[in-house]
Length: 216
Ligand SMILES: *[C@@H]1O[C@H](CO)[C@@H](O)[C@H](O)[C@H]1NC(C)=O
Ligand SMILES: *[C@@H]1O[C@H](CO)[C@@H](O)[C@H](O)[C@H]1NC(C)=O
Ligand SMILES: *[C@@H]1O[C@H](CO)[C@@H](O)[C@H](O)[C@H]1NC(C)=O
Ligand SMILES: *[C@@H]1O[C@H](CO)[C@@H](O)[C@H](O)[C@H]1NC(C)=O
Image 1 (spheres, rainbow, N blue to C red):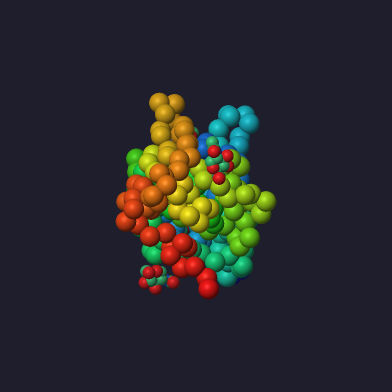
Image 2 (image 1 turned 135 degrees about the vertical axis):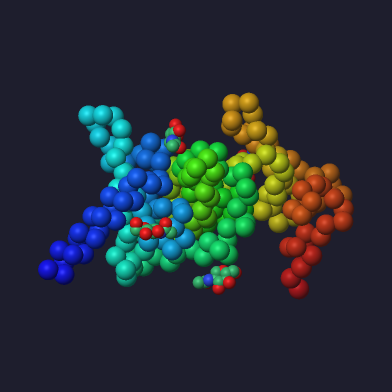
């Protein structure tokens, strides 16, 4: 009896919410995807490909109360920790998303976080997600991968520090091409200067953190 009521309520909420599907299944493909508008990590969308109509059908679900939706495992799990998006959201630059799907987080130099992009009413909802410990976001496969060697990938135009360089002398220059892709060039600052991540230029006034704290 109680079970029946729960099922009815669930079906009603699923049907009611289906009209406002938040995940673009055409962009994500078949599978389960987190609702980026839900900062509590409880809602997700199931995308199913209908071969007869060659379109996707989407169903929205809410995880059982004791669990949260893990975007990396693509399922509700009691082991997932919901990222504090109120805290991390301001670190996502406004124009990171250009299409539905997943992109590298330009603020993450260690590939530990990535961004989920969903177009809602003409505006991209950008949610920063965190890879499970020991895995790194691979922009080619768009998955958190334990074997991925975190390098630098241009996601916005400009100059960015090469964080692997402890001397602070090298940096990446990203140029957006007419094709929508980025060309990425490694540059090294003139000998007397270092690359300042604060001003994004080679300067003699910036002190490289590692070089400034020699051991011994
Ligand atoms: C969904 O994604 C597809 C492929 O990226 C795109 O062509 C389409 O315009 C998107 N639809 C909406 C409603 O954003
Ligand atoms: C999650 O889904 C429930 C049920 O459809 C809905 O009432 C709620 O508003 C959703 N939460 C968010 C943050 O979108
Ligand atoms: C999330 O971050 C905000 C801002 O830093 C903080 O006020 C809030 O307490 C945090 N919430 C949790 C659950 O950690
Ligand atoms: C630029 O630096 C990256 C990371 O260190 C390296 O993988 C790549 O080969 C370099 N490219 C050039 C042209 O030096």
